Amino acid sequence: MSGYIKIDNVRKVFRKDDRDTVAIENISLEIGKNELVSILGPSGCGKTTVLRMIAGLVEPSGGEILVDGNKVTGPGPDRGMVFQDFALFPWRSVWKNVEFGLEVAGMPKAQRDEKVERYLEIVGLTDFADARVHELSGGMKQRVGIARAMVNNPKVVLMDEPFGSLDAQTRNIMQAGLIKILDKTDQTIVFVTHSVDEAVFLSDRIVILTKRPATIKEIINIPWPRPRDRASPEFTALRKRILTELEKENVMN
Ligand SMILES: Nc1ncnc2c1ncn2[C@@H]1O[C@H](COP(=O)(O)OP(=O)(O)OP(=O)(O)O)[C@@H](O)[C@H]1O
Ligand SMILES: [Mg+2]
Image (cartoon, rainbow, N blue to C red; front, side, top):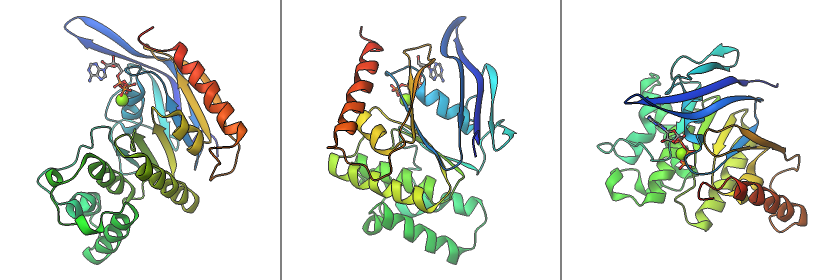
């Protein structure tokens, strides 16, 4: 189904002390159900802002966003977000962080326990269920954030550089895990990353944004089945082409 998420002519201006920063300039994009779309673009161009607007945490200055036909006016349980800065509850244990959304939803304890256990296993944190957030490494915190979002089984998962602080090996494991989840559910994933390799490995489509104010520079379809072979000539060629495009948008130019 096309247009499950509909971003319609969206603009975002941040105002501070009479100074306007145009972050997003008239972006339109439709994302289909069960699609994984990655957003690539230079630092500060507005990728997180796009995700936060879909999440309903930031209001567009112009245009509108629809999810499953409904205009986004605030956060909702149909959309889960994995934040760039983890945003975990420091006073709660790993288990309690992951359990949070299920508690809010009023799910019975036996059911909650089963789900939390399963997702902690998926992200490899079973042994750290009772640990506090400050006892975790950066990569472990990130995995808690992923489990916390995925456990609620939201229709839309918004992921802001979710694997950014993981080492290469764990990152590959998490990418493979995400592909498996995507195959088994009909979740729609909007994925922000700085890694071109990761975007080509995971995405049905890649959206490249320009430097701020962000507009859509190019949308690339990747019809290849997953898992994909990083060593294949077409993978390497596409990665190279995207890197060249991004280099042109380098904020330091
Ligand atoms: N709450 C805010 N108030 C004011 N300006 C903001 C706010 N949030 C973002 N901005 C500005 O909007 C622009 C885009 O920020 P955003 O965080 O979306 O970029 P990004 O593409 O996610 O960058 P990065 O790749 O470094 O995470 C930046 O200029 C930033 O300073
Ligand atoms: Mg960001």
